[in-house]
Amino acid sequence: MLVEKNVPLQPYNTFHIVAKAHALVRVQSDADVQTLVADPQLGPQPKFVLGGGSNIVLTGDVKPVVLKVEVMGLRLLQDTERAWIVEAGGGESWHELVRWTLEQGYPGLENMALIPGSVGAAPVQNIGAYGVELQDRFESLDAVDLQTGQVFTLDAAQCAFGYRDSIFKHTAAPADVASGRPAGLGLAGRALITRVRLRLPKPWKPVLGYLDLEKKMAESGITEPTAQQIFDWVCAIRRAKLPDPAVIGNAGSFFKNPTVTPEQCADIIAREPKIVHYHLDDGTVKLAAGWLIDACGWKGKSIGQAGVYEKQALVLVNRGGGETGEDGSGPKGATGGEVMTLAKAIQTSVYERFGILLEPEPVVV
Ligand code: EPU
Image (cartoon, rainbow, N blue to C red; front, top):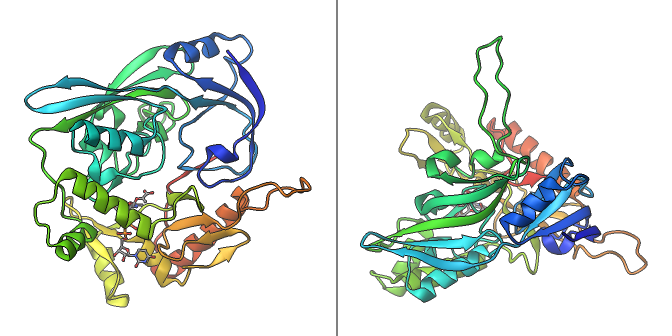
């Protein structure tokens, strides 16, 4: 097991924030994790699992041992009358997986094209876009327990998926005997996802309800698009609206879209008739956080080198390159502190105007 010391993490986070890992171990298999867990020195230390680094804000050097997931492999596991089941290593790029499935003739992931990040990180925040979430295509995953080294498998119910949420985002709360609260389930910091299996149902049916896709259909006159056509449309929509992390550092949507009761929504509409909102099946109403931030005048604004993207106010960006100055004088790009200061200022102004507290989506490290 090779332990790398003082490793720059800037290439490994899509915000391109400058920070270092005190110790970094590359994980290519279950056995690599087990070796680490059994190591007398590293085993007991706190650990941080790094996937594609597309949903994190680094606010300083990372002291826990960084486990960089590099478990690779893409394969078809089953081809039945009802579905294709594919398996991907946690270290694979999510977008490459989407592209590969389409090339092989297994459609179903096209609405989630171009989402940055790794396959192993996809279940953590239940990624989703244009009407499809990971949980809609999820079969199961394998993970390794970072305390015991035990390998385990979880199905969708066990992952407890929610909107940009799963069991991997929650810490296990101990039972509270006094109040009778049972022990909370949570695997945050406890597990490293090595493989994810996806179920792509047959016959393939396009998911087209999303407004941006309907616009593409109207523009092109294509009423029965293929999966490849939807893939191309989604890529075009994302490229037009969202910054490419390879060019401008960012972590996708910085806040979740908040949900409110119909009464709260009616109250806000009375004051703000133009508010963008969607009625959900459970009776609650989802508000477009991007609209709320935009309405508060944040689009294009900055604090230090951290800014609000000009074309989509829900995305915070790093306006600097993130490189260290030529004289070694420290980072030129945004620091994690600047990003969080900007995020807090946005939260405050949205709260003051709408009475809604926006919840950040990325994990702050
Ligand atoms: N809007 C504005 N101003 C803005 C941004 C948005 O008025 O600056 C309005 C738009 O006009 C639109 C509405 O807000 O009417 C929603 O915007 P959009 O369609 O861009 O989607 P979103 O709700 O902002 C969500 C996901 C994205 C996902 C898209 C498409 C969340 C937090 N974000 O964004 O996911 O790609 O829908 O499905 O749910 C991510 O999670 O990182 C991500 C990019």
